Amino acid sequence: MIIVYFITVTGSTYAYFALSASSDNKISGTTATANLALTVSKVFPSNTNNLVPQLESALGSAISSTYKCVDGNSNNVCQVYKITIKNTSTASVDISGYIHFSGVTNLPNLKWRLLDSESTLGTHNSYSATGADNLFVDRVKMSANQTNNYYMVIWINETNSAQSDTGTFGATISFKSSNGTGVTSTIGEIRIGENLIKNGDLSLKNNTNFSSFTYGTDSEGGYLSYTGNPFDTPTANEYIYVDTSKKYQMSADFKSNNTVATFYVGFRSYDIELQEISAKNVMYVEGSLTTLKQDLKNGDTTIYLNDTSGFHVNSSTPYYQLGLIFWNYTDSTGYTWPELTYSRNAWHSLYDYDKVDKTNNTITLSSPWNYGTILKGTKLSQSNDGPSFIYSLLSGDKLTSSWQTRTVIINGINENGYYTSTKFGYGTAYIRPAIVFNYNATPNTTLYMKDLTFKAIE
Image 1: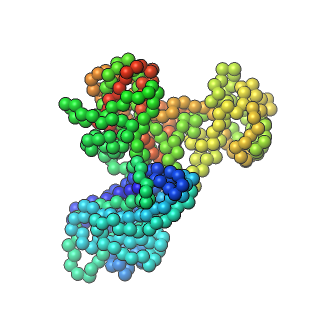
Image 2: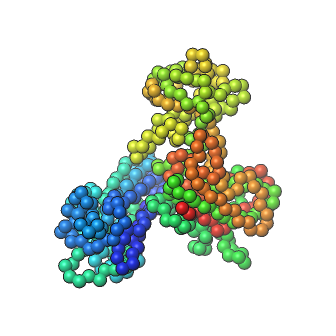
Image 3: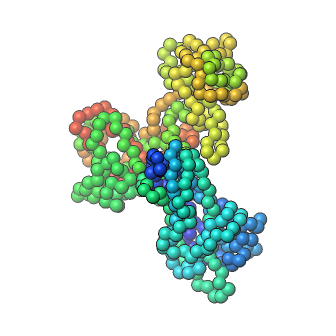
């Protein structure tokens, strides 16, 4: 199931307030487990002025005009959303889409309909905002890597008579497969101060969103516990959308029955396609940036560069620095990430330390190149690596048998290929809270957690 949630909050008039979305991943497809990625964006209007009633007969003109749902008094007469769903797996999946309104207060004329495009009304039917599951996409087959876009308009219908529409409304959009369920993830616009970790406060009184953990209670309330194998890395189920331009606060309470055991707690990072971001996708040896002097093709055993003076290699160079990261990665949105930011085109153990010829600016590969053609002029750096995820709350820490609160501020982007526990990595669009359990393999260890929060504070 994929769920989108958007809210309009007003006083006596109407104004766009917030838009968010969440997606259940691991939806069962027709041949295997399928992964769906969902994004939702408000197309227009771009302002947050009041929303006023609009004649349905004039709705087509409102969305196709240059004013885009804004009337002559600068009031918003409608809101148009773009819903993008992508099947990111290799399996096909059948999906159906629904909209479900809730929390509607005194809005008898609130309506919605699909559009042919963001500026084309089309011949779709219009529907009142009701609490039922209203179907708008019926059993659509999505092939592997297929992306579908849907456009929807919401407005208050003008009745040409006195109207008392006032209040608030909320709605969910869901995409469901016939037999698929999965975990939830939150994407979309961030609401300041809201805990983005589903069931982080354990208000559901179970282990929802923390299926690897056990829920329990004591005299102080609910908690999660984990007793597993050393080096286990249990992770929260949901993907949380983040805006890396914002400042976040992460916090949790911890204790352990074993005061010698060590733990790491923070979050894993994922890009817009929900691919996990490893350190090798963002780290590099500083000062090694250069460009290909010749095309690099499958079967080549020598790489020709314009400059190798920045490569740091000697007999003690680790394997993960004996590789390359190419700054030519383009994601599913069409965005090509600049050099020294984020790339999935990174490989380790490509050559030995003594095969970097700084006189002729060449690198002799240990095996023939087999990662496809990379064109002359492409920028690249010497590869690097580091921690698998961001250890923000605990970093090899020991705990006591009493509850301790750990809080950290996450702010900004890790620059220059370094690792910082209080910053995001380039490419980050989602995170999931995660731990490394009992890193020093101390027997008979249990970790306890509660009051997990992750919220934007600016």
